[in-house]
Amino acid sequence: MIRLKDVEMVYENGTKAIQGITLTIEDGEFVFLVGPSGSGKSTIIKLLTGEVEPYAGRIMINGFSTSNISERQIPLMRRTLGVIFQDFRLIEKKTVYDNLAFVMRAVGASSKEIRQRIPYVLDLVGLENKAYSFPTELSGGEQQRVAIARALVNNPTTVIADEPTGNLDPERSLELMDLLVKINALGTTMVVVTHEKNLVDRFGKRVVTIDSGHVINDSVGGYVGGHIHG
Image 1 (cartoon, rainbow, N blue to C red):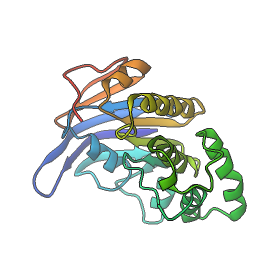
Image 2: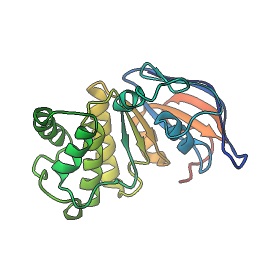
Image 3: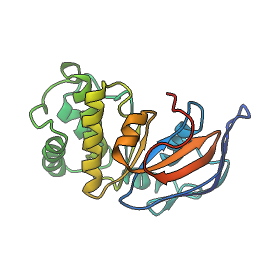
C-alpha cells in the first residue's frame, strides 16, 4: 500500500512542487497519474522512490515510512518497488540477460535465483528469444519491454512507470499498456504516469489528476479536467 498524508514538497529554489497531497493506493490497484507539465507528477515519483524527501507530511510505502527509515531499510523498501523509466536506461554493453542479472545481484540474489527468475520474466514480457541480444539490436518497443522485465525481476509488490510509452508509436504504446494491465492482474500494484489521454480513456482505470501540486480529481474512468500536455 502507498499512502501520502498532507505531503508538501518545496525545492531549494523556493518552488512549491507539491502542496498538501493526501492519497492512498491500495495493494493490487492500477492507477494512472496524469496532469499538465510542471503539475508535480515527476516530484511524486521522486518522493515514492526515495530520491527526494518530503518537506512536510508522511509517506508510507509497502510498510515503510520514508520519513524515519534507517539507511539499512532503504534497500529493503526499494526492493518492493520496480521503476520503469521513459528513457529505458539499459546498459548497452550488456546483453538483455546480463542487464537483468545485474539488477538481481544488486539486491543479493543467488546465481540459482537469477537462472530461475530471468527466463520467467522474459517470457512474461514476450522476449524469451532475446536473452542474449544487446539493447542496440532491439527495437524501441523491445527495449521498453526489457525495461519492464528489469522492473519486475526482483518480484516487487509495486511498479511505478514514468511515461513508459513516451518514446513509442500508438500501436506499441497500446501493446505496452496491455502488458502492464496483465502484470497488474497477476497482483502487482501499478502506478502509471502518462500524458496520453487516449490510453487513459481506453482502460477505464482509476485516474488521479494532479495540477499545481494538488490532487484536483480522483475517479475511475477517463481523464477529467483540462487537456494533458507532455
